[in-house]
Length: 273
Image (cartoon, rainbow, N blue to C red; front, side):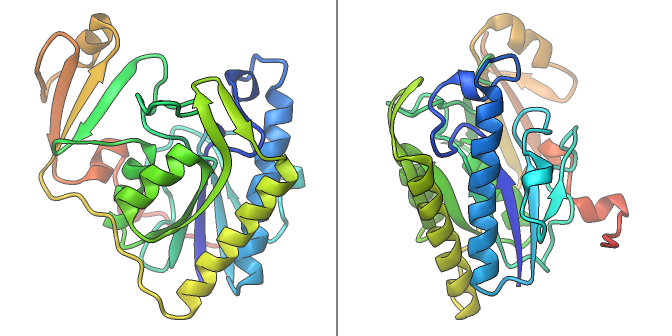
């Protein structure tokens, strides 16, 4: 039983403002510790339910956020940028994916630290006519690799979005979003308890033979990215794209993974650990 854990920072237990997630901030080191502890809770839950292998991918910003010396020693740790391909070693041998510390898509009412990819420049990201956040982007890439998302953690808006788009998955709500920079948080200890229990239930369901639905996008994949500022759209409007209006650029490819560096098996890399 192999589990792949992708970790973001905004939806971590106890995190509620940019002060925890920006490297230049005075609370960033606290955010690193909280992030590492949530990851360890998910890793413990997976192994306690019978997982044989767990890969942890640090996907927040430029990576290097998880305190690797404090990470559960049973986990394999994937760090570094660029995230291309987005999920190295993701293939049919992986039974399920966890999305830990994720956040709601840009524009979600009362979503804590809501955004899609770039809080500075992206206003909306629409795939084949449907608004996507980072949960949907990563679930679609995993789906193209034959891997279902089986568990998420974050605020209540993230959990609602995930269940709506991905179906009957496990979700650990660690806070209630009140605004972009405010939330009603569980204590980090209780939040980690929820992460652990959700992770454990997800693997138990897999071990019991339950089939989670793959999240797939029909090909061709048309993506419209609407930027907050016209100059950002100007820079994105390169060969192969189509300008929709002053703020929006459209691009079409055969699959979701192609927007994020493709699928790792095509890079000819073999996992030896």
